[in-house]
Image (tube, rainbow, N blue to C red; front, top):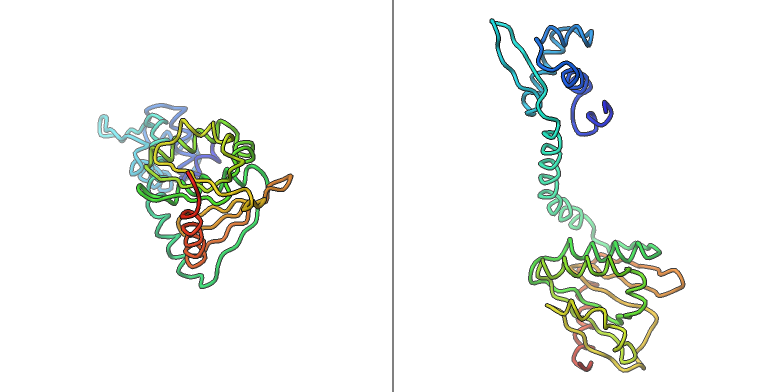
Length: 245
């Protein structure tokens, strides 16, 4: 427990004092000094820090300062607040990172987990009204990689966030998208002739292009580049015009 308390932001002395208070209940500060064996000034500083975090309550009885640990669920609320603050700053950090890179960022990964991670990334990056694009969508291979549970979860999140989905598949895949019918909201699929078929799917979301190569173990190539994403999006719209419903 001591290690966990330090990991969520308490100093070593704050963690030590808080753990002691959980055991002792409401006691004078002098009791914590005796329990820990630390100098009184160190304990008073630790108590002040815990009070500031809302983890310790202070009362005065007969001119003596008493302290007690607040409900440990306060730790959960503190961590949730820290996480929410982190979520608010992450877009700015990502923007700084992208501005610092004049060249494309390219990554490769393998396996079904990589495909699931790619879909989750699209949900994080896209906002309401944005669109997720796919060229060469293969119904059977994609569902096999995602799994029914993860597919349904990502589609529900997409619809909840009001993200559109436009996919280009192939005529020979028409009957393999049956499982997608319950999630047709904000979604449209068109079909290309079989002669256009290639063993890969290209996905475009925000400034990211991901190419899934359907080998025995799928390979995912991720390219972060606004220029490349715009180029692939232009290609998508060209194909969209000749594809059929």
